[in-house]
Image 1 (tube, rainbow, N blue to C red):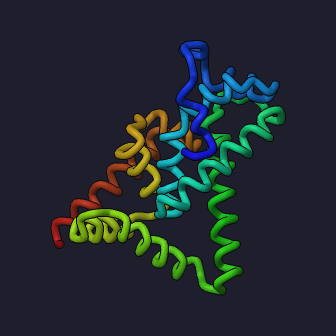
Image 2 (cartoon, rainbow, N blue to C red; image 1 turned 30 degrees about the horizontal axis):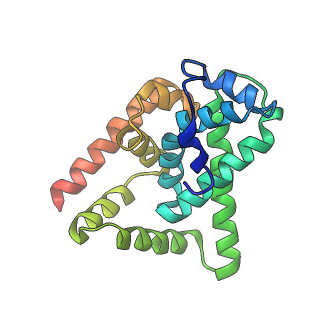
Length: 191
């Protein structure tokens, strides 16, 4: 990412340190802890944001805004053992602020905005047939189901990690994932 190009220079210090500890160190202004926290979480947070906004360009911008907010707000973080959930909350709020801003600017509804952004995403994927099938298939899912599927498939998170990150019981995440996969199978089977 543009803003965080400095993350590539991170060394081995910070390896094995929990995200909770890193976030507390970020709160004290520790840049190395911030780099490590970013490296540990950026892919997952990006996938989460993308599952909401459905536009890679917007997702990258919101990702940068999210980590800026993490940097400036980390000192106020109250440790509960769930730093990724805290980061997700920041990201979700920024996504919804983006929707509100665009709605206000263009005077279109969120449903119209989602269709527009899905169109932008589709133009960026190379294979037209595949992208149309993927977008249509993901559209049959509810937002929480879509987030779970994308976090599992794209970010490679385990169901237990997704449950902790989204602050849902594991059984709920597993149930929603199975339901989502069944919906996708049925939809793709008809297509």
